[in-house]
Length: 203
Image (cartoon, rainbow, N blue to C red; front, side, top):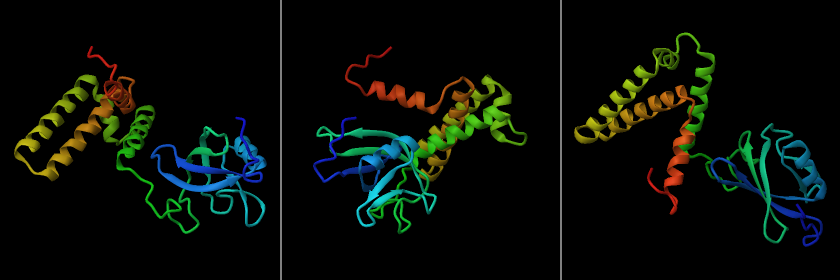
């Protein structure tokens, strides 16, 4: 990057954004040294205008900002830093410096997928997920079908609460089936993303 540190007397704004939720977490400033340290360590380091020194976010609290990517804007004088935060970002204890919650329930699907991947790798005794993997693809596929039927029944003749419950069961068992075949829920998301494109054509 050819960043321009001259416009603001040696500093550039660094917008910190959660790489998964896209939530803006905070705004800080970097000088050349802070920028280079961030690159070297993979943890966001700022320049404190009050203390006039470098500070790595999380060095006292442990709530580090782990860098995923860094992008400069079109004028080369602002950074967008995408991170995985290790905890609350604001010194007040909130997720963001604007007091917002940094969560989107849909992101739990990634956590669930990672959990199921681990179960598939370790196959611990006493785990329901392990028992599904051991039952074989046919049984897993049958279970997905059963959960799909139960979801349809609740949608047509049941309650909204049971619809959500059975839909969650369906999604869980579908992820298990996908995992057994070497795929992830991400692959379904990618397919849907492609279908959303104007250039997509049905197979």
